[in-house]
Image (cartoon, rainbow, N blue to C red; front, side, top):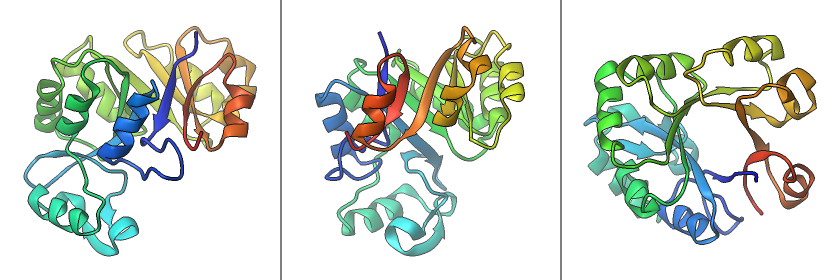
Length: 215
């Protein structure tokens, strides 16, 4: 049986990325969620993709330089309230798989806080394109559920090498690697992303774990 996650909660074009409304709809449909997290100036974890508010809110200011109260004020005025990770965790009710992507490089202090905040939620998996985040997290808690993310610019050889680490539970891969036999033959569990529409979903869904959107 394959496992399916909604990319940033974008169930359809009616649901915007990384909003509580979108996450709730994803769960209602029976899917898990992939989301991105950053830490605010006051060390709150938020579900948000970008390093700045420029793309979504037209404000060229870094997330890390704002307290959550200010971020909430800005985003709420635009009717796109940025949720805390705590909000997502509570909404998931410990029933749905959550892939939590660490966007920036987090300090040891923040990683410890993240582990504490998610400690009672069994279905959290921490992933990152910045693999140092994952290795540092494992130093703190060696049995954490983790995955390494790879872009289409990474080599299959490098992916195979990194998959040999027995503490890594998942590989998160661009869909181009669906065609690579060496990758397909790896025993480690794999999730494929950039599945952007229903036709791609139908094409790849049969035997693969997917992170998809706009079904």
